[in-house]
Image (tube, rainbow, N blue to C red; front, side):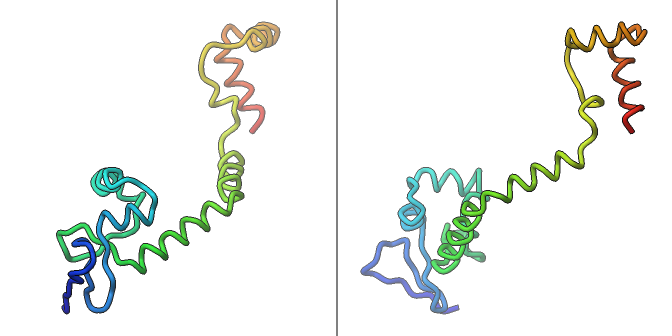
Length: 133
C-alpha cells in the first residue's frame, strides 16, 4: 500500500494508492455540518455518513466515495413520491382498522354495540371484523 501525506495540506488529508482521503474537518466542510456533529455521528449514527475508508483505525473517507454518496442522497431527496408509495403499500397490506382499534370506545361505537345487542364494544368490534373478511 503506497501511503503519502501532503505536507502542505491539513494533517487530515492523505493519498493512499492514488485515492484522496479526507478527515473529519474536510468532511464537515463538504457536508456543511460541524466537526462535533461528524464525530458524534461516527460513533452513534454512522448511517448518516458516507462509508468510511476500511482497514485503518483513523477516521478517514475517500473523496470520491463522499461525492458519490452525496449525489445518491440528493437523488433520494428529489424523489418525494417514494415515501408516499411505501405508505400507500403499507396501508393496503395492513389489516382492517376495526381489528387494530385501541383505546376507549367512542360514543358512536357504544351506541352501535348496544343497538346490535352486544354486551361490550369489544364483542361488537370482533363480530364486525369477522363479517368484513
